[in-house]
Image (cartoon, rainbow, N blue to C red; front, top):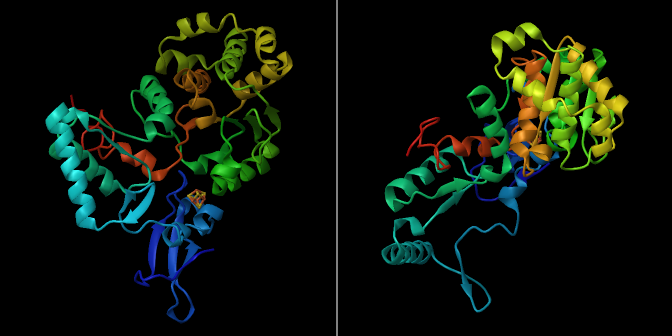
Length: 361
Ligand code: SF4
């Protein structure tokens, strides 16, 4: 647990950990005899009441680390030298002006990221469009979570992270965790899974590796990277062929069922076994278990999204939830980083203006 002892004001404050999508509540409390600030878990934040993982507990180390750069540095003779703020800002501005005068306004691009606050992301969008008048701005989510965003937009017409609150997890009877290592990446979510297990839920993990999360699973599928779509198509095949899908939901709330049924026809469990090595019986067991479960949840993350066919992988899992009528309480495309999610909305991506959801040409 880190304690803030540098020159920053020693004032108690409530905040959030910014390192993953759980965004656990943090209390910064003064240490004994007014000595610095200490990070404590918030007892009032409903998502992770009283819990912080190692990353959150040590969040202040980012602020305190001795190698943290607190003033501008300039390249000098193969190394670095301290530069004043006016030298740095003046030098950067002059270079931007020179490049734009010679090559045009779009010759300068801006790349933001999830480490910035919402306010800075907003200002960055304004700065790029209004001051630089460049059309090139983007942020780290272009690689990180873009596949999930594109898949959600195509399936639901909306780019949002999840379709249910975490408090639904203990109520689920079948949970598929695909390409996601919750126990190490979002540790404070684990108690929700443990509660679901206590209530009788079956947990399936799909990951090439054995992980802390797969230790919680009833079935662990060690799928080779690149075969996620093949495997999910096998699940969809079984559900369609055995008539296990939710007819009412599919007819009333979805479109394209006939095309989907046709597309997954070749993916018999034996063909899936041939391609992936996953035993035919395993594909059948998971497909039947999920389709027959009263409440099923699918959670996907970067493991299957950060592939060349990440959108397709994610869409296939969304189809699994749609086909079984589990949307609304069943599909979660988990985000990683608080500001990664929100960097996009205040304007740090090319297709959004400096306000959530506003498109610009
Ligand atoms: S679970 Fe995520 S938000 Fe919570 S303390 Fe750990 S890294 Fe931070």
